[in-house]
Length: 264
Image (tube, rainbow, N blue to C red; front, side, top):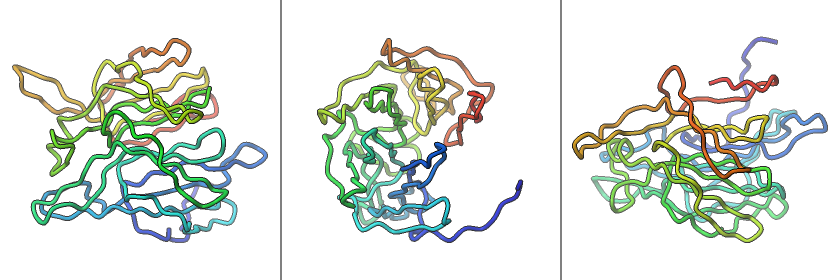
C-alpha cells in the first residue's frame, strides 16, 4: 500500500539486538521473526553502564503480534548475530555482555554461542568460537554449516570501554560451525578487517559481506575508517573474492531483491 503503519510494541525495549526469520509460509514468505538480546541504544561508553538482555521474543507477521518467549539465554548479549539452522533451531553467536565495572564501565566481548529450540522453548550452549567476536556476520551455507566472519575482538583483555576499542580491533578472520558435530573450523581470511559489516546469500550461493568498521596501519599506528570493501565467499572453493562499493558504509541495511540484485 506504499505506506507505513504502527505495530504493537515489542515486549522488550532493546537496541543492538539480533533477529532472523524463523519460519516461512507455503509461499516461502516470512511467517515468524525471532528476536533476542540487545541493550540500550548507546553501544559502549565508559561513563554509562550497559545492561545486556538475555530474553527472546517472536513476531507473528500475519497477526502482527509479539510474544515474549519463556526460554532465556545463559547470558545477555548485544551486537550479536542469529541464524536459522536447517533443522529449525536458532543459533545466537558472539556479541557483548555487560555491564561490568563500577566506573569506568565496560562490556565483555563474547566467544560463546547458544542454540534455541522452539519445540522445547529452551537454550543450550554450543561450543565457543576460537575468537572473541562482536558485530560479526553469520550466514548459513548450503550444506547447513554456518560462516562467521569479522567482528571486533575488543582490547587485549577482550573488553570494550569506549568506541576507540571498537574502531581499531576489527578482525579479518572467519570460522565455520558444523551443527552436526558442534565443532568450529578455521575459514579463510578476508582481505580486510571489518566489524559491523552486513551480509546476505546471493542466488549463486555466494555469501556477500559488505562494508563495516575497519582500519589501516601507518607507521605502526592504527587509523580507523569505514569500509567500502565487499567480500564474496564461495562455499565450493572455501575462498573469497573482493569488490568495492561506491561509498564507505558500516552498520547499514541490506536486502536481496526478487531479481537477485542486492539493495544497500
